[in-house]
Image (cartoon, rainbow, N blue to C red; front, side, top):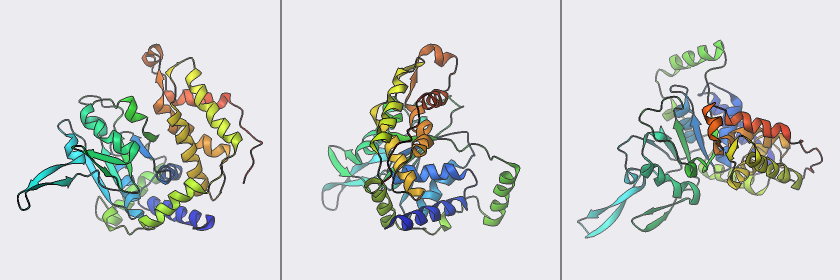
Length: 323
């Protein structure tokens, strides 16, 4: 797959998703970039803004298997991973696979389950493998988790541990429709579909195999200059030195910027990364990895503003070399 073909495939995917989901095209591009980077995405926003619709539309557009888990306080790890059950026919235990054995897992309201259940996702999110009763199984390819949580309703929720937050490549927000025209378009599409969920009728834009090819191209064929690598490293280190921050971004945050910026370069039809690609994802990739000092938490300082201030304090490199 050459660069022009890859760019056209990405544009076709974005067009298809936007034909169902009404919202910011840049948000859809960021979601596609995250999946091309084989990363997980946490959607944090109010209910009813299309997070589930967006996740399902993406999954069916790339010809991948889709599973949805509704996280609740009584959900057990085995409900996600699966378990071994006794088969009386041949006198042995056989594996009953859980919904984790899929390509796209929608973890809906992920903060509704206790830490024991949340931790069931840690291994597969990082290592792409699942261990059940001491036996390790290799996960599907591609595989990514799209988690959702409500940021304003805390009753009956369990905050995600930092280790799990750090495994999400990006934290995105869909937001409310930006104009009266978008509000009206949502209503018009609902009348046209004659159903609340049109995703089951979607035909894939590309196959799962071709999507894997796009992922491999983003990983192997997109050049990033040493100057831009230094720029990313400076951003990460500055988050740790900020006076309002107790714990800054981990090195995984730098890897998230590297992977997502490469994928965005591919979407934009380039085989090299620019500083703008990095800046596009700085807030989405780093804000959720910061832990603020207590006094700034009490004053409800926004981590996004801190990342913005870090970006503004670092000169943008202009002497990088395209391939």
